[in-house]
Image (cartoon, rainbow, N blue to C red; front, side, top):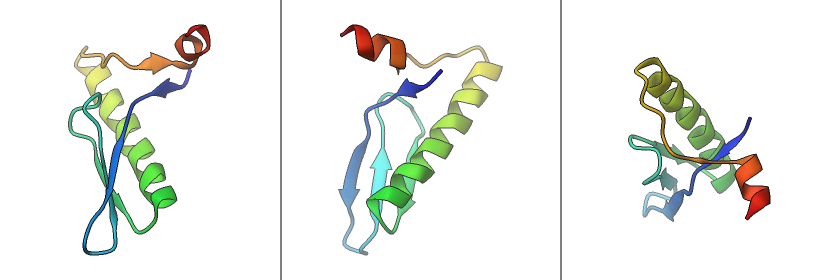
Length: 70
């Protein structure tokens, strides 16, 4: 099941993009393009959520089912 998190993406002076998320603590991703940054952020989020699940700490993210309901 897919989950969604809001990302904050900003372009840095070094001509790279930085993504962070208040909903996924610890998520920081950097890429040369927005697309690359989003792909990296997805991988980082997946790994962070897997680590949280191992420690029984689930982040409260919206699922695809929730997004269709609202």
